[in-house]
Amino acid sequence: MRITNLNPDTAIGASAWFVQIEGHRLLLDAGVHPKREGRGGLPLYDLVKNQELDAIAISHCHHDHVGSLPIALRYFPKAHVLMSELSYFLVERVLHNSVNVMKRQREELGIKEYPLFTHDEVDDIAPVFQAFKYNREVDWAAFQKTRAGFLSPSLEFYDAGHALGSAGISVRASKETLFYTGDVCFHDQTILRKARFEGVKADVLIMETTRGNRELAPGFAREGEIERLSQAIRRVLQRKGSVLIPTFALGRTQEILALLALMVAGGQLQPQPIYIGGLGRVFTEIYDLEAHRTHRQYPNLQLHEALNLTVLEQGQAKKMKLTGGRLFVITAGMMSENTAAHDLALRMMGDETQAIFFVGYTDPDTPGGHLKAAKHGEPFLFSPSGGQATRLCEIQDFDLTAHANRGELLDFVGQVDPRAVLLGHGEEDSRNWFEEQIRMRYPRIKVIQPKPGEAVDV
Ligand SMILES: [Zn+2]
Ligand SMILES: [Zn+2]
Image (tube, rainbow, N blue to C red; front, side, top):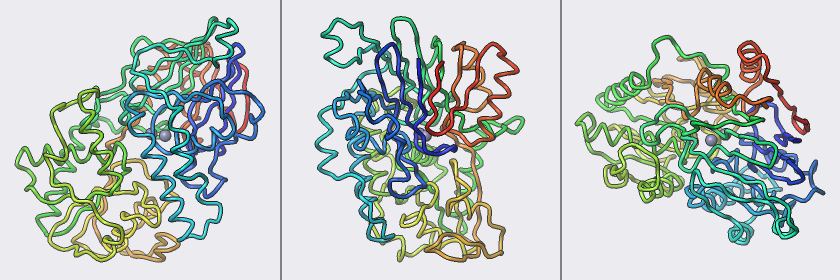
C-alpha cells in the first residue's frame, strides 16, 4: 500500500492522508491548518489531484481534521464521505461556522482569499455525507468498481474517546489492513469514556503523536488535577475575581462544563451564569441530545439543565463588567485574535484579582502561548492587534488533556503489532521520541515520519 502525507506542515498542522490500497483510493481526514492563513493552510491536494478517489473518511470534527472537506470535494467530486454517526450531527455546523469565521477574518484582517468556501457549498455537499455506527463494517469502493465485480475493501469506525464522534479508522482490503488512530484518548474524561480500540490489529498503523514531548509527573492523577482546578476556581470567585477558561467549542467546552456541573451538584460552586460562546452552546446541546448514543459517564447529566448557560454575544467581551466573580468557558482555546477569549484576556491580564486557567494544549506561537510564557509584571507581546501587555493576573495550567499519554500510545503500538508505523499529528520532538522508543521496544517494526507531501510504500 502507498500512503501520502498531505499535511503542509511538519507540526500538527492539517491532517490528510491519501491511501492507495489494492487499486482503491481513500482520503483519511481533510483538515485545515489552524495557524496558517488562506490557502496556505490547506492540505497538499494538488499532489494527488488527477487521481480518482473512492471515498473520504473523517476521524472527527475538529478543524485540523475536517476544516477543508468542501475543498477536498472540489478535487474529488465523486467521493463518498464517511464518518461516525455522532460526527454526522456536528459536521455541517462546524463547516458553516468556518465560513462565518473566514468571512469575519476577510473583513477584520483583510485576507482576500477568504472565505475559501461558502455556505451554499456546504449545503451542496451535505447530501453525500454518510453516517455509520461504531464497530460496523462498511464497504467503501466506488460504485462502478463494485459493479465491475471488484471486491470492495471495508472500513470500520472505532470510538476514540477524544471528542464527540471521534473515531479511529480501520481499513481492510483483501490482503492488507491499515489502522488510523485519528486523535485518541486512552483515559476517561469527565463526560467521554476512553477509546475502545481493544482487539485492533493492522499491517500498517498511522498514529497521532501529540504528547510525545510530554512526560507525566510521577504520581500524576487526573482526579488531583480536577480537584486543584475546582479549588482554584473557588478561591478566585471568593476574592470577587473572574475566571476565564479558554477552550475549543467542541469537546473541551463540554468537559469543563461537566466539571462545573458536578461542582454545583456537590455544593462547591454556587449556581451562577456561566458564559459560553454561540458555537459552544450548539455543541453542548448536541452533547445533551445525543447523550443516549454516546459511550459516556453521567448519561443523565444534561448540561443545559444543570447549569445556567449564557451565550456571550459578539462584542460583549470588550465591555461587560468583570468584577464580582464571573465564569467564562469560551473560545478560542489558544486565544487567537478576534475571539472572545482574546478580548477578555486582554482586559483581565493586568488585574491581580482575575484568573486565566489553561486546560488544554496551547501552541507557543499563539496569543495564548505568549500569555502562558509571560512573566508576572514583565511586558510581552500578546498579539498583533492586542499589542504589548503586562500580566498581573493569576495564570495556571491544568493537564486535562483529551489526547493519549505517550506511554499508552506506545503500548498500543505493541497491541496493533504492525509491520510499519507512520508518525503524524505532532511536533518534531514528539515524533522523534516515539521513533526512538518504538525502535527500542519493537525493533521489528519499521518507523516512518513522512515529510509534507511525501509518499511512502509500506
Ligand atoms: Zn481533535
Ligand atoms: Zn487534531
